[in-house]
Image (tube, rainbow, N blue to C red; front, side, top):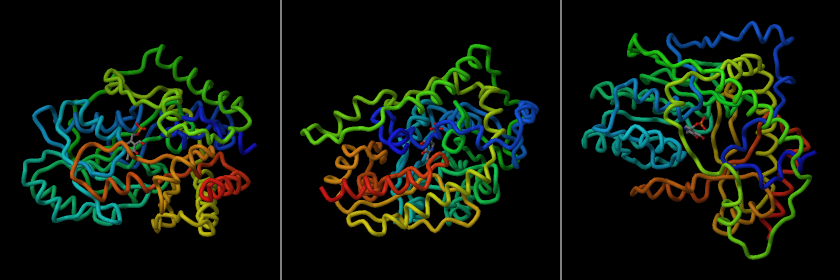
Length: 383
Ligand SMILES: Cc1ncc(COP(=O)(O)O)c(C=O)c1O
């Protein structure tokens, strides 16, 4: 059971936390009720736009704030590669600032960087932990007339909108990370900054059919995965493995940025029960965190998540990442890290990119799966 879900080299690592199917097991109620929610994408925000992904939401937010190729956008040095791609996609110039040990911006460094002429700042609430300095960053941005975009891709929106996305001009979300949807993101405008004339293209029939196909395909792929992956110790490199994983590359279609997500995706999202998923994720998070405590060479990254937060992944730090990250991959552990950072002088971000790994805890994993995952990690780390 566990191997079917976890141990497949066919899993694109960056997409791994995508829940495989269990939409029906997390649905609120009968099918007709889900259908009635078809057009309902209401959130706690006054203006929210349903996009195809978190990346599309970020591009849409930047564009709506008027950012273009003349502008500089400040990003954290420790970032998901898609964030930089979003900035580059609109021709703007990314400026990277290092993060602190607790993954916030250093306020002095931030202010200095803003002096060089920045038009928008992106702040990430990493791994579902609300950034404790978001208010201060927002004040700095406000005093200089700079847009602040809160990237909430690691946070669930439905439950407790008050935890994230309260201070910036826009908050962006990635629904795919929490729900079994074929596509889905949100760009939520917080203040009065929302221009009234922003309209998104509607998805056409082809998008809808592709969405249904994608959802079914992902679901059935989950069921027919190979039973196990044989650990490879034959001298290959980590890159060999990555190169063989379909879908490992990242591409953004700009035509998809201006269109809304499909009705299929909305329906699947709205049909899910976020509270149920949150509880399973929390249990998985705590269980795996406890089990890692007994394994040498790895420790959970201290997050201290609020009670009501839905965990995204379990971040953990490797003592010997150069040796153990490839070992984890070869053992078949579904693990990934942000080791493709954009060029910068951000030394702490580079160190984090190497040693900070992300482990799955999503709601499709049972307690047995989590135990097996911990066993696999232990096997890899004693090699
Ligand atoms: C911090 C952050 N922002 C944005 C994104 C992009 O979200 P999506 O994968 O939905 O395009 C990601 C993706 O992993 C992310 O980690």
